[in-house]
Length: 194
Image (cartoon, rainbow, N blue to C red; front, side, top):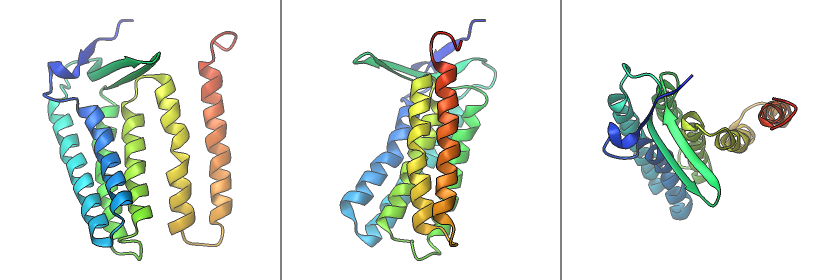
């Protein structure tokens, strides 16, 4: 079966998927560097809104009539491959992630963590991870995003969670997460498991 791959330059004026991943990361870094309450909120809001607008542009640039991978970006460096793109399924998860991040930000503004640089940076870092994972076409790249994903989830659970069993919840989550990553690794391992 041959899958058609359409590069980003064939349907968009910029590498949307890389920018979608880098925008919340840049806002996260700005929050951590500035570490001033009012600037934290401003950087977070600007990063979230810019990512949301870019995800809207992604939907406009995506052609639902074409099958296969669209808006693909492929770069090789130091023997590693950076390969991203979208198809009919994951193109919807990217705007959904940006909407959920915006809703989470709105919720955070009603809590005592409204200007907390660690929480806002973690929210933007988690958005970066999800956008990277949803657009990854390389199995190793996807695995790395999924492996890193546990850190913001654990931090947000421990730091902002409620209830007395937060640590136990994170331990159970880490067990299931690592088990899933291990099974994914075994499935990808060359040789006898194929």
